[in-house]
Image (cartoon, rainbow, N blue to C red; front, side, top):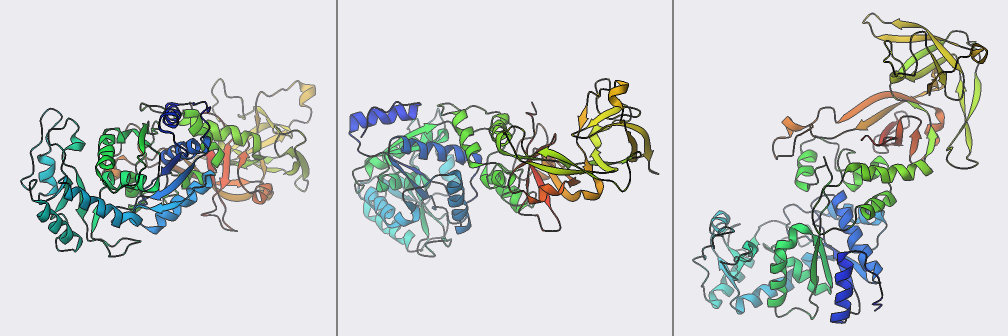
Length: 544
């Protein structure tokens, strides 16, 4: 193996050292998600680290479904996870399931019992927790800790045979109830669950705990480096204990290395939170644009390259920190600024009548599809005497620095004429119904030079659509607490408008920049031929 690779972070530095000291011939990593939900942005960081690290060292990455908790897992989530990894642009070497190793893991547990290093315990979960001790006080030994090897083997076999109810017995590792690391105080390694497994059916009613199945699976597959987030740092000692004490393992002893998990300011990244939102009907499924799942980002028009660029920019750190969301937004914004087609949409319209433009006249105005690209193609916009403009581009009582349309004020219509607002027409409720404006044909001669330019659409040619913008799901200052969503959900997390777009928009696929408004994409989940939906990918400028 090439030992001249220059490491760019502490994980790669550790691998370089292992290659030199252990004589490793091939670097193998793994991404081991539990198939109990959709992939989120935190997973994306782990995926990039796992796959790109192995790739740099000319190794490979396995995808392993950690399906050891059948009460929450399904094939639906397996397919979603696989789809998201492929979408990000990665290919795994092998697809494995932890459930494929159940017999092997069971035999490892038998081996521990035979060594006197595991015992069947009758204590309930709350009793185990109460007897575990604290950081300053040792735990209390289970009264069942000193059962004979023969009795433990018999009871464990009966557990497998289904003779006991859920929670009636567990298998615990026998380590040290006074160990300074609480994870080493006789942890549970098997529990009883009479739940049908989505792959194994009813073959098993006992299931290994993550801390037992995970190191055994890594070793069984020949993983050399088990890269995981920082919350598993305190579990590393148990990970190593399992590998060191299970005698029937193959020769490979993987090394666990932890990195800081992804925390984005103002964003809750938690499957439990997502389940409560989806199951409670607070959002439109796992791909709701307000969730930080990869399915959501894909639906909103984020690209795989933008997600990978974000993961590169935030880097690989040893300690947790909070990343600002504008870093992710900047990655997609920079990409779309170069590539996205420009088009006109009026999100929240006001009608404008051009009183001195012939009613039966129209003219074509050429506009660039993307002015940042040299020799970009152009398309036609139609100008007529009936227009839509943005509601925010008119102010009846303007502030001093408002340079768009005002009563008796002037503004330039993008690519077209300078107009003056002559009259504001209100409805019976006191709301603006429409504006009567006129073209200033001799603006140059009059020395009229408006400071503002606004976009517009011809009303007879505009296509009605629905546009949506999304904001934080939780009210400002609130944090997620299970069972409290009714009180902390932001009622304005989605803002929907009846909007209008130029016909050119309907012919486009993928992202577009709605001029002056933001980057949008058609929502393929909701759109129909006669009812089009467009959702905002990202604003034109950083909100900060």
